[in-house]
Length: 119
Image 1 (cartoon, rainbow, N blue to C red):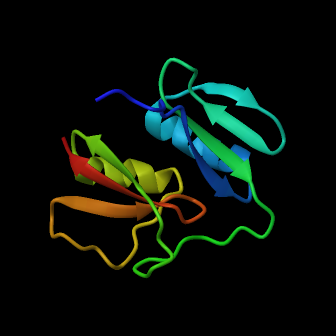
Image 2 (image 1 turned 90 degrees about the vertical axis):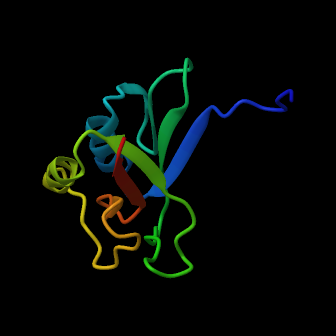
């Protein structure tokens, strides 16, 4: 099947792009490719970039409710060690953890959800 489009960037709304870009830069190892006061991109045009866009009046997604719209899944070598490192960077571990021991749900510093699983 031929593609209609190529995914270039996933952009997260947030109150402070620099804070969220610094968090995800440490998580992924991606460097800042572009930055201004209201927008920061991690990565370059050779892969999918992560973008962080300032939004006035930002409201965090809900969990576990219908306000959760999307989330990242990250593969890690050791889930417990990754959770410890990620919480040290500012992530939080919500009380609600579905799925048993296969993965851990976390929230980034502004409330976007993501999961880590062994892989």
